[in-house]
Structures are given as C-alpha cells and as structure tokens.
Length: 145
Image 1: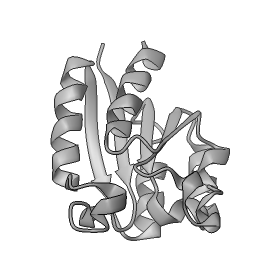
Image 2: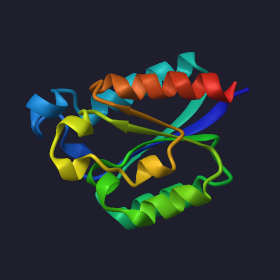
Image 3: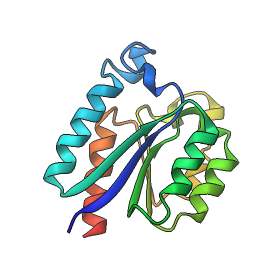
Image 4: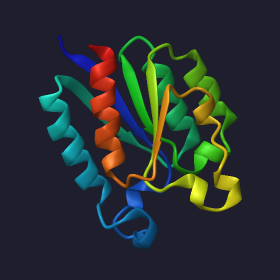
C-alpha cells in the first residue's frame, strides 16, 4: 500500500545552492527534490513537495494535508523560530510530523535554538545537511508500515 507524504519547505529554501553555501552546502532545492522523489519510489511513498516563502500558504498546505496524507516532513526555515500559526496548524494535523533542518540550529545564533514546530514534531533531524531529508523519509516509511 502506498503511503502519501508531503515535504513542506519554508522561506528562503528556494535559494539553496547560492545562499550561504558554507552553512547549507551547494545542493539546490531541485537537487533535494530529485533525490527525495527517487528515494520515495524505493520506499513506496507517494510524495508531494511544496515550498513557499509565505507563512499563510504553508499553513494552508498543512491544513489541506489533514485528510490526504499520512505524514509531513517539514523544513519550516526561519518560521521554525517565529510561527505559532504553523505550530497551531500542525497541532490540528493528526499524522506523523518530522522536522528537518539542514544546519545544526543548536550551533547557530541563540534565537535559532528554539523551534515552535518541535513542540509538535514526532522527530527532529538537524545538522545532517541535505541528507536529513533522506533520513526523514526512511524513518517515515518505517513508522507508516
């Protein structure tokens, strides 16, 4: 049975590959998407991927996931540290939620150490670079079996 999963990426992740490569590496969001699509096929996951720089759009995607998908992998970007609204949307979602950060947010500026999304996430993956997405998808597949 196929498991439907969303990957949701927040603000500035569309700039990966050119934005602070010393922190985020050289992979683009398109590179990450291609890898995730390839991995999802081997894991029997039906994957949809989203990115937005707009908080309200991310909230609408999360709200729309409620009866459609078994799990959400979310990299909320800077909204991790500011958005109670995204946390509220995730709190209404009943499926598995995995939070991903490319960098280790705990080794960065102090304001990045707290993530509102982590209060809802079933797991948090940070500091593994873009491999965090693969880790999240593999864990998602295992938990949804």
